[in-house]
Image (cartoon, rainbow, N blue to C red; front, side):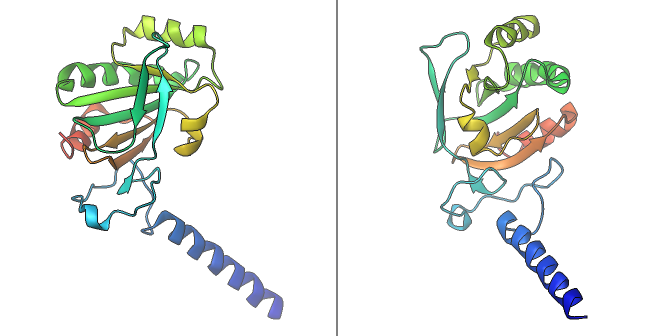
Length: 188
């Protein structure tokens, strides 16, 4: 009996720990509704989940290695940060939607596609970009620094970040274009 109580206590502590780490008791999925951002209520520590400031990083471009792109902090436009790899089948399916979103909203939205260069080949990434006709900045993450900061464990994963630098949505996997449009209304 005592053993069962100890096991139960450990399970309760584990569940509470996960709930506290998430900060709200709910996961950051593509279907969650965004709440209006009150910067007073945003935790000071950046975290890769909704209603937190986006973790800061700076990476170089894939096609122009001298170009540096930064994420984190206030900006003039909203931002999508998309983590992808050339060998990722779902990334290939998602690419036309990202291209269309960027073409439609580039006056008020930036899009940075972060290649998982630590798991990918630069040559393959360049071929992917050429085949898809991507015109937005594609960044390289050769040491996986940005991927680690954003806790990326699979591809594709995207973040919609508002002008204040707050993540409004974390999107794991592919979502339909209508869902993208719905989530982007929160930041455009």
